Image 1 (cartoon, rainbow, N blue to C red):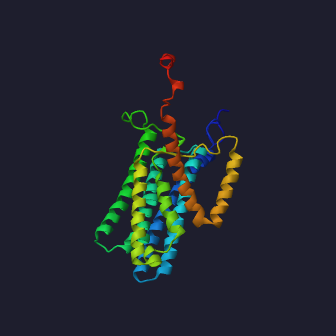
Image 2 (image 1 turned 90 degrees about the vertical axis):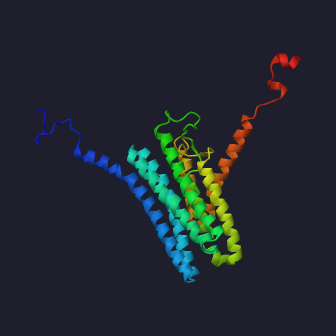
Image 3 (image 1 turned 45 degrees about the vertical axis):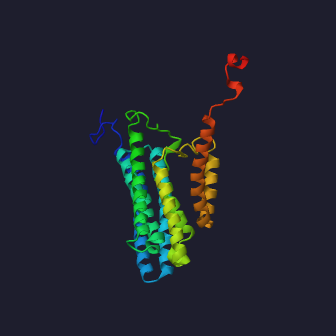
Length: 303
């Protein structure tokens, strides 16, 4: 009998297994949705903090800003997990890739820009002044550079063969340009390190000075995102025989973040960016030609 009693051929896949396979596709998307949710929460927390600052309630404004910064930290975790889970379960889809990029624009582009505005120069500079307008422009450029960085990454990842000549090739071990989650994470780490709004913490004059420094930082991060500097992707971490050591290290870092989040998160992000700079400098020195006589042809040595 070639068919079962229900009329379905014996070789037909089990519908329950097909349903389970479809369910796996929802797991990475759920983490991406959580990423978007954290970005939305950060924006709403920053807006509420700005309202409280207007009535002089600095303590509650500080709490809202701190919670918004923490939300971006959680979003970083969700952003790392959704891609890894999709690769582990082999449920990577084109719509998932595009959804992840849109989520990053919201959570690591718009949310940090709003957070920096409320925490820093929004209350430090008079509205309509030159510094205020420059601050708005820099925040906008931070968002635009981050969006361009994501668009460039998607094009390089999906169509690496038809890119214009001279475009940097894709490398799974590194990112081209500072990833936008790291840029947004640095802004969030700074706010989490000292969540009190600058105007309330230091007074008007010092708050303006620190706001200018914040504007410079946002500008540097914008340039790094659209640069061709390479930053490690850490996608190969844990894929070899040392995966157990990687797990132990990750657990240890997680405990440190839980106990000393204000210091550890800022140190991790700064160390990642500094590592990219040092790797670039080391690469420049390695590429420098050796002009010593050891590498000259034999005839040149004799002469």
